Image 1: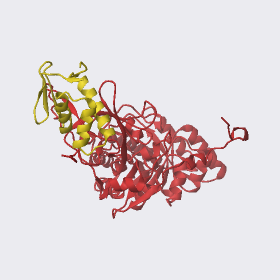
Image 2: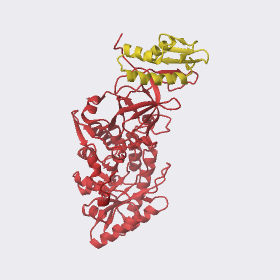
Image 3: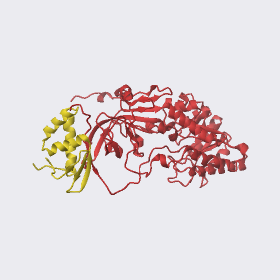
Image 4: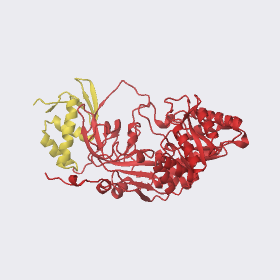
Length: 82
Length: 452
């Protein structure tokens, strides 16, 4: 699970993928997850970060993260090569 | 850094190039209160889902409609269309305002009597009236609107046998330039069937022809069609006057005025395309006033408006059961109400509003109901803020037909409450329970139990 390396990310949540020309917008929690992915954080570590920073429980964080990763894969922002 | 506000992670692809002249912003704003009542309190006190009716809006709609007609025509009478919403509380608001009752079955007829409507102020429409139904209507001096020749001859035989008299009208169907033409009800104008029925009635001493009735369709987007209908009824009325020197007491133009809901497949929002009540009123009254009917013999104008008077006077409050992602990446949101409660979701794109604050992010989604049936879709595609399990939503303009056409299927039907003129809430129909369902079941002895 790795965020594609050449993706540009702005502080406001604007994301640009130069390899496809697609651009995206994300909300603050989505931006946080993308930053953590860029730091090569694994799923468990991301969940821990999210539950530490936001007032949510483990199961909500896990459920929402799984769904978000699925969308990132669909948008070709994430690949499964280790 | 703990306790930051959490919103489900969301990412949206930005599309450029294809411009939309209507803009891309959604119209959605949170609806946290219905009139002055918090949605949260409604859910806490009455459960979710829950239908909520506004007494204030019903009275306003009625008074506006009456004003539109009475400022144009001297004799106007509304008759509340029971099938649109026959909750006693709703019917009695209309009756308190002066509306008669318009019913299409003996069940509705008895409901009107039970609500204290005098028999002579009940209009009995519909294709299915038994001999016993007709006898009751005759005894109560109700206005019997004959739908077909079988009914006409049955009523004639019944009256001859009982030596009683009945006040009758015929329902006339006609080409008003609108498709589909509703020719399954009543007698056709163009092919002479209506005139034949009138001739038969005029030959019966026991029947008094007091009016003519038509109901040209439902959710009619053309006010001009009502002008055509009124003209054809006036033509029959003038011919009756010419041939038998008889002036009719009333012309009943039926119902079918559109509400502001948006039909599926409509390019524009319902509110932008429907005629106003004034448009309908102008088309009908100007036609009658300009007809060959003499001013001193103008018949009373009866209207059986249903949908346009009650649709926007009710909401459905519901909650999110779950959210999931479909195989093609679309968001799916499962609500605790479906087509079992929202029958009109089959033909309307109902407006759905979240009942709590949300961020500016929105996503396209499919709104499903809770039924384990593929047909249970409330909106095929709707753009809404990020919804989570337990969030509440408000569905708008659900007052017409849903509370009569709803079905007890898989789920039981919920409470209906009304917000009165002072903002107080009252239950007008209790939620169903297992006992409600079992009350009507019988178990033969050999099927009374099983052992697995």
